[in-house]
Amino acid sequence: MPNFDLARASLRELNATLHALASTTNETHWIVENPGGKHAIACGVDASVTIDIEGHVGYYCGGMNKQATIVVSGNAGVGVAENMMSGEVRVRGDASQAAGATGCGGLLVIDGNASARCGISMKGIDIVVKGSTGPMSAFMAQAGNLVVLGDAGDALGDSIYEARLFVRGQVASLGADCVEKPMSTEDKVILKTVLQRADIDQSVNADDFKMFGSARRLYHFHVDNVDAY
Amino acid sequence: MCGIVGLFLKQSKLEPELGALLSEMLGVMSDRGPDSAGFAIYGDGERGCVKLTVSGANEAALREAIAELGRAMGKEPASVLRATHAVISIPAPKEKQVRGWIAARRDISFVGAGTRMELYKEVGLPEHVARRFGLAQMTGSHGIGHTRMATESAVTTRGAHPFSTGLDQCLVHNGSLSNHNGMRRVLQREGFTFETENDTEVAAGYLSWQIREGASLKQALTHSLADLDGFYTFVVGTESGFAVLRDPISCKPAVMAETDDYVAFGSEYRALAALPGVDKAHIFEPKPATVYAWERG
Image (tube, rainbow over all chains, first blue to last red; front, side, top):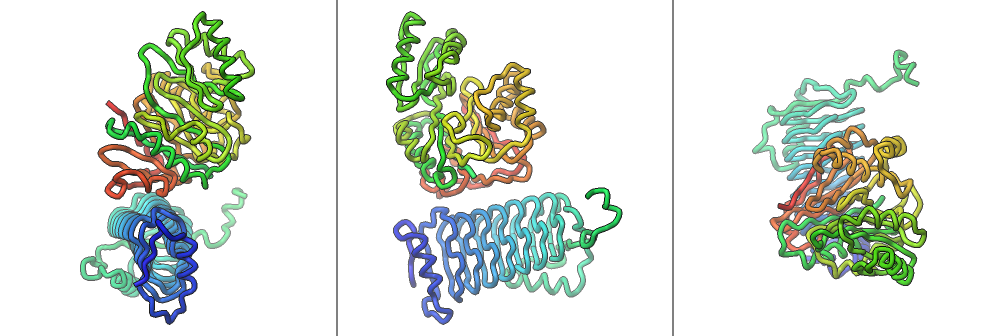
């Protein structure tokens, strides 16, 4: 099992090694020690490997991830798993702002709380936050699913295009053009699938959630708003 | 961008190490602000005395100025010289007179005043600035540091943070304020004078004004949410207090660590990573538009 100690080796060395992995590599389990809050750990990985990071990470950990499973045994800084394409990023602690920003695919699971703007401009990623999310989460979300087991902060889903936002707790307030929607059978199946992928379908009941999405009033220019320009 | 670090000790145990810990934290934040750096440190104070921190071109200029001050006062005041800064200890009743004397001189500038606070700032890489002033050897109960990437005013020593506009009060800021010119005029009418065109100095002046009018540090910061407009993460020090405030959309980063021994602030977790016991600390992000304040009893 390859072991990388960031107190001794450089971050650039770690990322270059991970980038060089062939998708058929036999070295499928990596351990990263002493991350020390460094930025861009395990960014741009494109191989079906598991990377265990033992400690807190800085900005953009697991950014642009394809295929890999990245587990952070600590907190994550700004933009964890930003622009993820596929694979999984799991954070055992809390995540800072803009977790999963612009993510196109894959699964981000945050065991603790996520700070402001979680899932900003998400484009297909699935995000599960076991705690609560900060203000302006799913701002301008375009596609994908945000599942919050706790509460959502102010202005949830502000200026949302499309995406499903499932919240089990309280929503402090909804952002512009974000509304509560009835959950169809199809929506519930999608929610259950996300819960299952996050390994919590046995302990969490899909019926306990409310669903929010776009009222689609901001899609087109409305002549009544002409004075605003 | 800018970087902020702060360390507030709840107990005296770590006081001998305050400077060393803060120095390391400041060095780590060099990436966020390589233009200039500064720090305020709350160390020893002498009863009935005020410490005035002044800056000058070099040690010789400072020595000459202090000698002249001694002749004017009839007795040369106790002073400690560190590179381009000197800390002059004077009897508290003489503060106004001595500050007037400093203001009239062209070869030295006033930096800050406190019963316990000393304030150092200079252009250059933060780790070099810390080394020049010997931060690692300093002791005290709390300290605040800043690494600057200039946006609103020039890269000069006077534009570096922290800014101090009241006795033992200092403020560092990551962000930029948009209504500082208007607020500066309000404060000037209230009798405040400003050394620079810098937006952060206005924020410091605003808090000093609020405190002068009877507000606690916490109340002053709460009022600033309504009166100061822009992006900001503020970290503030007073003689016995330490406070943090982020703007309502938390535009600028902040992370804190709290243990039984200390409260620490960093713009990024990296700055806190080497603190003793941080692996068991309560690590959290201060919420937007929420005042966090600690006071040492």
